[in-house]
Image (cartoon, rainbow, N blue to C red):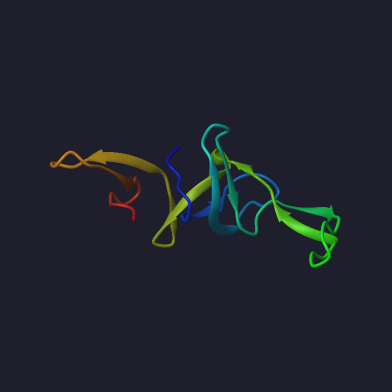
Length: 101
């Protein structure tokens, strides 16, 4: 998976198309990511202990990684890999050719 936790992405398909957010969690086995503020669902939560409050909460749900695109320097771009002369593998932005992160 070419996306990592902390990357800024934009949604390119689905009900939240055009929204931008940061990746909070990555699920490589399922090819899904959780983006903060995107694909939210309401959940009725019961208070489990005396200090925990129950009620209706909004929760970010996983979205398929193919429906998001990395944002590098303000523009959405695809991600590629490049192997440097010293043998390290780095992510590059396909649009500009610059190293990401």
